[in-house]
Each structure stands twice: as C-alpha cells, then as structure tokens.
Amino acid sequence: MATSIPLGAPIWADTTTPDLATDLAFYTRLFNWASFDSGEQFGHYTELCLGTTAATARAVAGIVASPPGEPPAGWGVAFHVGDCVQAAAEAEKLGGTVVSHPMRIGEDLVYAGMRDPDGGAFGLYEPLSDHVGFTAYNEPGAVVWCEYVYDGAPVEAMQFYSELLNWSVRLPDAEDPPRDAPYVGLWTHETNVEFGGGRMALGPELEMKPHWLVCFGTDSVDLTAAKAVDLGGSVAVAPVEDPGGRMAVLVSPTGAHFSVMSSRERANDA
Image (tube, rainbow, N blue to C red):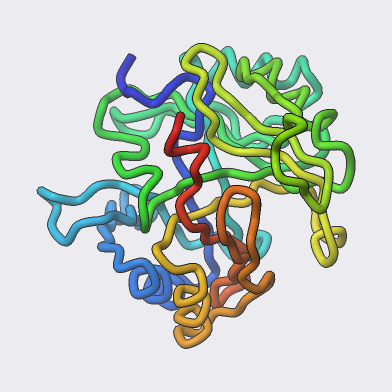
C-alpha cells in the first residue's frame, strides 16, 4: 500500500472556485497555509500545506479554478480505494453515478468523480505513491472530520458507502450526548478508526443537496470565524457546542461551505 491512510478513509479534500486568486488569498491567510501551484500542465491545481517551504510542507488540501459554466464553488472529499476502476464500477452497481471516469493523474494517483444514489458528490482516490494524500491530518489547520449532511435518515444514506468502502456505520450509544438531529458515526472497518459522521440536515441545510462537509481543526472556533469575516468570507452557522467539540460553518468569498472545529476527543482517541 502506498500510504498509511486506511482503505475507505478520507484521503484528500479540495475545492473548486470561480476566482482562484480571491479564494486562495482567503484560505492561506485564514489557516496560515502555504500554496504550491502544480503548473499549467495540471490546470494550476494548487496544493495547500502546513509549513512554509517545499521541504517542510505537509499537504492539507487542494484548490483549483472551476471551468466557466461549472457549478458554484464547493468543497469535496475523496476516499482511499485500492483499485479506482473496480471501485467506480462497484459504485454504479450500488446505484451511484460516475461523473468523471477513472483517470490517471501523472505518476501519483488514479481518481474518479462520483455521485451517490442521493446525489451527494465524492471522489474515489487510488494512490500510486507515498507522496500523495493527506500528510497533515487531525490537527489545527488540517482536516479533522468529514460529515455527510442529508435530508433524511443518515443510516439509510450511509448504506451505499458502507457497502462500497467497507465502513462500519454506528448509531450513538445511550450514554453519548444528545444531538439535535439523527446521527451515525462512520468508521473504517479494518483499522477501526472513526473519521466522520452522517446527520440529518437542519435549518437552511434543508434547502441544500446532500453533501459532504469538510471540517478543519482550529485552536479557537470563534476567532477563526471572526477572521473569516474580516477576510471577506461569511458565517453560515455561528459557533456552537457540538458533542464532539465547538464548531462553526463558514463560507468562502465565492460561496464554498466548510466547517471549523475544535479538537475532537473521539478522533484523538482512535
């Protein structure tokens, strides 16, 4: 295996944007990320990293300009698979849809863009080297959680993913803190690592399509939310206490939703 990231787990997150310069400035200043442009050959796909030099940089996510006429800016998550072609075919059998067929990208990975049976977008990602995927994870400034938001029973929506990616989908225990909406935890089966959850949509989310919400760690949710506004973004969900830690949903200057969270005890214990 080319990476230590477990099969089935999130391995990469990225966002499209109609205004690369504006959003790039926003994210790099918000999270103190460095950026590395892959060049014209790869459409100026830009890697976002913790660290200031190429030698010390640890990859967090990516950003790329969306072609004219494409949907608005948005974050997405890709999951680690051993064979992208086989996984894409299996996803279709389970009711999913191939948006972009498996494609080899340089010498590093094979990727396919997909939609689940409810319309939620996600990626299948087969790494071919140990230089791709997250090299920073579960710390301030990096992805700490991925959450599926769905107008319906989350355990039903997650059945597709559990069959495709061999996840364990678990209902909360009786002793877990109460939640405002039905919820399930998501675990990789072989390594028993909890990486995210699925929950019923609330409030304004009911007007949105099912989607994966990418969540970044921060030492202070409130300060990060305030800084996002100062940098030209906005707050969709004000800072609030969640059973896993304090969180807020923020919006980039071009409209991409993402979340910031304080340290999650469950992830640290995994």
